[in-house]
Image (cartoon, rainbow, N blue to C red; front, side, top):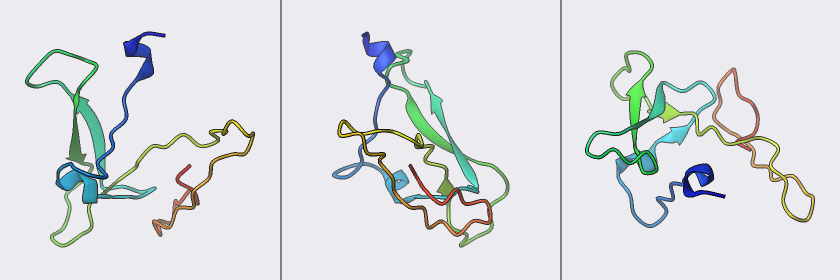
Length: 95
């Protein structure tokens, strides 16, 4: 396995920027995109959020966390977390 095939994980539990306060929605008004702007190392892109449409003042900012559904733990049980986004298109679970 190479470093490139492992991908990366963002954990902002202890430190991060304002992006860590943006909630998930199954019908988001923003999307996340990997961007290289101050270096060319594809293993460590900056994750930037872009509006899907004009966002009204005081509207909650949301994006789809894009968790994989159906991940299985070593004990054979499926990991599952309910989604409470309230969208009419809600998938009912984050993963």
